[in-house]
Image 1 (cartoon, rainbow, N blue to C red):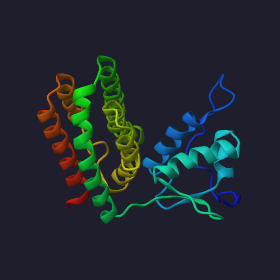
Image 2 (image 1 turned 180 degrees about the horizontal axis):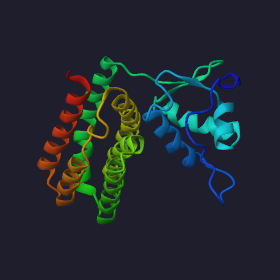
Image 3 (image 1 turned 180 degrees about the vertical axis):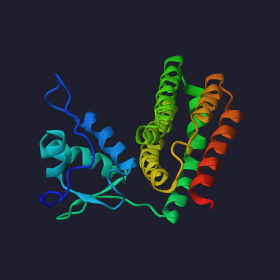
Length: 227
């Protein structure tokens, strides 16, 4: 990746935290992903490890790990001797992603109904509360990211590592498509629908949970693909 500086300052406030001299990958990842989702980093834009490192006050090796994580999730495209580039999924790719998610998440929610523990249900509800708070504050990027994290947390509860790994390659790219194609902030994935799914999982009602997840993904598909 080339080390040429950007022509303009990086489009968000650096995350230097008082009393925390060195930011970690886990600190930088959500801030960078939120900036991408809010299109403060435009789709298909390019940037460098050096410019990101300067913005966050960390080394290029830390930035490289963040970019590798986003690349694994297909949010960032990394190619030898080229600057990192934000992915720009088109309508066909988005439809294929949603088809794959539908098949995967039906199984995930069935497994979660059988295995969810009270502590895990509380974690899901806390995540929904954070998502709702972001929507109330009109924080579009974090709301989209947290919505995706809800689905990934549900996959973790299901206890099937290959399914969770596969979903981790689909959900972040869906979030990117939502940010690009959905005009109205935070209408893409209602927190109320997440709450209803959790209620069904907590009750162990597999049929209801599957129906709610299917309806939830239908709504998402309609907002992204039906004009």
